[in-house]
Amino acid sequence: MGFNPLKEKGIPIEKQIHTWSDLNVQPYNKRDVHPYTRARVILMNGIEVEAALFLHELARNSNDMELKRNIAFSRRIEQQQQKVVNWLIPAEESVLEATIGYEQVAVDLTAYLARTVPDPYVKQVFDFGLLEDFDHLYRYSNLLEMTEGKKAEDIVGDLTEVIPGRPTIKEHRHPFDEIKDFADRTKGEYMTQLYILTLLAGEQQTMNYYMNVGNRIADSVGRGLYAEIGQIEEQHVSQYESLLDPRATWFEMMILHEYNECYLYYSFMEQETDPRIKKIWEAHLGMEIEHLRIACDAMRKHEGKDPEGMLPSSLPEPVRFQSNIDYIREVLDMQLDLTAFETGFIRESELKPDARYLKYQKSVNGDWVPSEKVIEGNIKKRGRDYRLEMAAAAASSSGKSRS
Ligand SMILES: [Fe+2]
Ligand SMILES: [Fe+2]
Ligand SMILES: [Fe+2]
Ligand SMILES: [Fe+2]
Image (cartoon, rainbow, N blue to C red):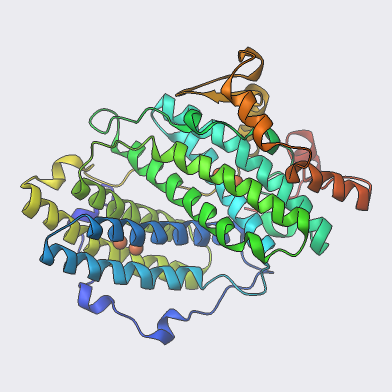
């Protein structure tokens, strides 16, 4: 039988408070961290940020003192967890090196979720976003080589290719075309809602990161690139959040958040190769089981509903960070020239001449587009752009692989 967080005993909430010294964890070593350990750290930071912000929104929409006090307690713990997780990232990783990690997360998480999500419409939306973050990885990798003389392969390993995706210049679309139909939570599997929330939280944290660190870059093209890609992350957040079923109540959403935290910590605890970080995932799982219990009690009290009825009897198959090289190549072959139109997707060549996409493109892409300039700049400096190609023949003949 699988793991059912509703049936497990968590850590009592009063025992979850930690000292400053506990929060101030030793960062990993950037030279020997596994790329997917870094990826798990980046994603779980995004999950904890979403957990804290969601509970703030809930508090702002509640007039119940007891509820507000209880969620203030859970939220304080989410904030502690966020510090522990995000403080694993060392200062020796530059803003731009950390950015490469963020985009590797976006690529391999989106690809994994797209491959395994049961809902075909949600899969299409994920595949669409995948090719865009894949291109961001290529643009930032060129900025990294151009401005810091470093190679993205030292960060992503041989797990993720670095080649052009859907060109970033083509990704700028009218805001109306980001809004998708939602996935009905009463049909389909609960897993679909978990996947959407996971990807949304990851993309939201990437959006937040670029909003804040884009001005820490000295190079002018680099500053422009963060502004430009930051706007695509805003599009991605709009796209993914529109997939969540908006008819879910606040208490359903509270449970969804805590259940998802249990799901991800459980998934990553099983896969983590760094024993010290594995212990963190395990400890956080114990905390989330208790947050979930608190959320379930809140639903029973405020809505008189039974939360067990809406949750699966055990956690779905674990979410995995794994290499998706061939899958991404397939999606590239089939979907490179897609653009969004209303709640669906069409080939750019099928757009009418007066399409709002084309007008929007003209409004933002003047004569200086940073995502193009960064490639031109690196070619000028090195005589070629930066790429890391591993698919098919290239990968099998080289024989190098990193699990
Ligand atoms: Fe948490
Ligand atoms: Fe991205
Ligand atoms: Fe993104
Ligand atoms: Fe939580």
